[in-house]
Figure 1 (cartoon, helix red, strand yellow):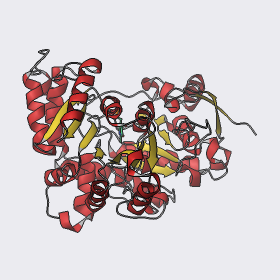
Figure 2 (cartoon, protein in one colour):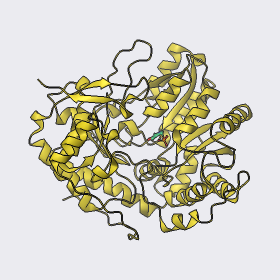
Figure 3 (cartoon, protein in one colour):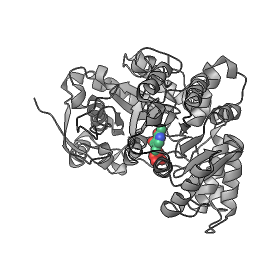
Figure 4 (tube, protein in one colour):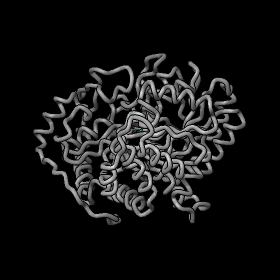
Length: 461
Ligand SMILES: Cc1ncc(COP(=O)(O)O)c(C=O)c1O
């Protein structure tokens, strides 16, 4: 029987949810061009589209909003955030608040990438990949063999493939590479952790070739929790100590604070020991995000983030949160539903290619299962598969993802065990009629980050 770790908090405010019928949802999803991003949120019962910005603030965060300093420059809230972030990530970082993760990417990459240079990663997230491309760079993902097999468990499936990294540098030359970037946890692979040992090795390779090592660290605390549990060297370390060890390995980082930062909006950009890059970042932030001491956020947002960063490394909260994800994973396992195993930090990634074996990758099985979940029980999930990948920017050819997942991302501190049971039961019900689930084709798409706005239709055979 799946084990559920009880909430280490109680609920102080509630938000009602609307219950709808399958007929109503069928009509809504058709009107939305079969794209869950285009649904109205009030037509969704359980929203597992993302864990980004969808978490519940704590009472301490709500209280902090009232003392936000809204000065244009030099506000008290900025300094509070700076002190908290430096204590956590390293005193020698220049730390810049920005309005969310992709703003950090938008500011950092043009300052770092020469046109045509590669950014080599364990797996770049879609916005990161998009911004590498917009800055003239070429994204490269080097996934390990363990990361490619959803059904086969491994401790650190999120790692970068070190031999492949060495080979890539040898083949292309260090000059053709702008940076090595490690995404922690590896979102696209299922929120899978990256070992400190792997990051140390990547650091050594980067040093040998004079390359900067960057972190995309949206889920730095969840990664640290897995490191503590799975890397014996860190069994007795605190989560903050592991976070410090992680960030000490990097030259720069981007963080979407909407995940482990426990806020609804916000991001951070950090740069270490690089005056020229820091200067470029500052001038770009002033032009694009706002003055340096607010970076596109309100003073109250900075306050909430400062509190969020301290709550993020609370081990009890992390044990419960990852326990919730493991509970849903265990329920699916009992039902024989294949998913990325072991589950990652922020959600369960169902192997849609295994769930819907009659669909080809270009019929978007991850998306097809997400649509079915919505019609079945009002659950909103997301494709993390080939629909997420834009066509190759040079050849225009469709790109095939390493895996076709339907992501059930769990917002932090929002849903209960009963909600997770609704999700598991819905998947079990769909499994019984899986052979009838249609694939999808794209009717309309944007050039970059197409999955957000694409319109699709079911393929009728
Ligand atoms: C790993 C990773 N990097 C970057 C981003 C982009 O952050 P944001 O949505 O705050 O722009 C995300 C968001 O989901 C992410 O998961």
